[in-house]
Length: 343
Image (tube, rainbow, N blue to C red; front, side, top):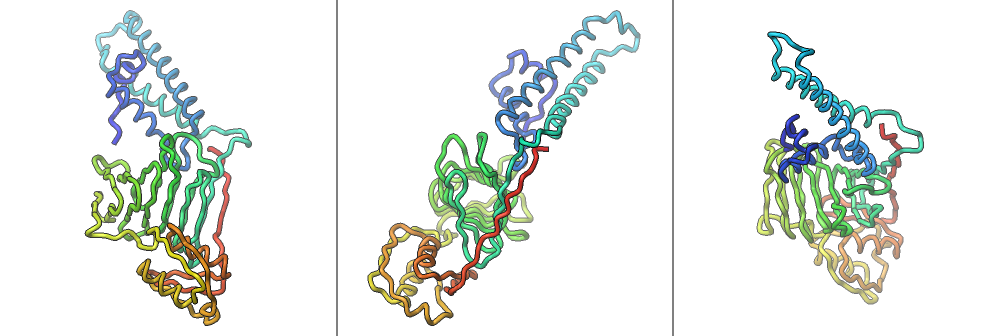
């Protein structure tokens, strides 16, 4: 939660008299303005906003000083410096927020636009999507992600609904931040699974690396997860539960396996995959069972293997819980690019 920034603290900040903690409070307060992911200003815009804010604050403080150092103009038995100070402080804060929102909402040239990509998986498959930074995401059925056409600024921001597995491209200078299911998940480069379905508990399960999970605007809720740990957010209570491997298992289909086949019949291939990933893969098409296969799957997850099988055998699949059905049909992602003016 952002500490309250007072007029006195802003004056200290402008004079360069703040402690490191106070400087951080001012920066956190500024960064919290308009922090909705889809509407976050670019770095250039942020610098311009900050410049306008500070210039405006300086102007208002100088005006206030002029009033205070000329008491003869305001002589009166009812003169109360404290009231004038509070009035000036209120004016400063109104002006600060006014500058921010005027800048944020003022009309922009038509060529200054931010394009948001919306990907919705309305199929019965787990669908793969490569993001602008080469991060790979796998969307379960009835899942949606929203992200900019090009990541810009300090953070790589994304919104989601449903169930999504992430294999994030490492970039220590630009953390990957996901909003979904009432939590904020922050990583530098790792693989993990998020389940964010309406009216169900939100789950963040880590396969590799380290992940930070917190509840927005609630103090002391951040938890750090290591491989084979997960955080669970109940819809009824605003706190995160951390669980380890003894209590949970990361979805097994995302574990990396190495398996090879040489002139192997399809029924034996399905049996081997079911054993490796502890899942039930079968087919309703007898013709698929007639295939034989030569393949070497090294360090691959089940969705990656199914993707390669689909390309080589012209098959696809439907997933329903722990059951996967192979068949001779294909479906596609629905991708909706949208252009939004930075209004």
